[in-house]
Image (cartoon, rainbow, N blue to C red; front, side):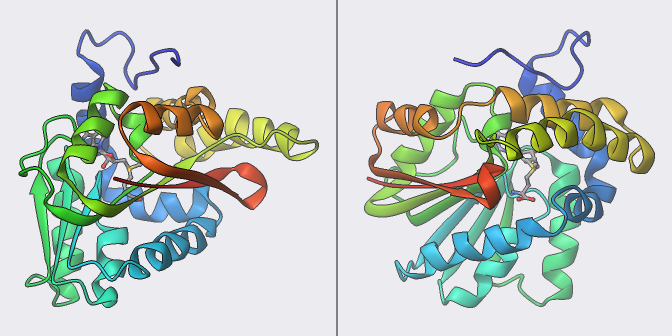
Length: 242
Ligand SMILES: C[S@@+](CC[C@H](N)C(=O)[O-])C[C@H]1O[C@@H](n2cnc3c(N)ncnc32)[C@H](O)[C@@H]1O
């Protein structure tokens, strides 16, 4: 298992509380910085996630760690009857709810405050579940994934988009420079919370990816587990079912 990386190491709070506080704090400029940090590539990755979900023709979709709701909003086009976005951070959800209202999608997308490690849904509730850049923030990864497995319907699809680490020259070296120096610098310049952006790059470097994450998915009960590295391996899309 990876080392425990938390946003505010000396705060005395558990990782979950620290993560919630951090996202509450950066929620106002999260969307803008997200585009800068990923140099716009996250838009392309999200489209791939949506295509995978759409292919299943789901009626009910749950987007966990939905944050400001980008993925949930883009999934509004796939003809699902109901989309639920769930997140720990009320600050992130507030930004998301505004975006949803502006797009007249309040009937279709519900934003719920909650914890992925104790999901407020019955077993077998959703046809599709997504998590974009969320799993590495979970305090107890296996508990979060087991809960997702519990609320996914048999035959349903689970899609994870998460940062990973390129393994080949020169992308490996380029990635180290970018995430070790550039990313914290961008965070320091554009965000009021420098620790947050240092946490985001540290947690990306430490988080299990590829086969290691596949194995955790299998251990928590998922089947048909596959991973597809994106853009030289800086992100990976994982698919699994129940
Ligand atoms: C990097 S943001 C990603 C937001 C969004 N999915 C996106 O793609 O832009 C990570 C989100 O995970 C949420 N999060 C972390 N741990 C969580 C948990 N245990 N349950 C629910 N949400 C969680 C945070 O509050 C934060 O909004």
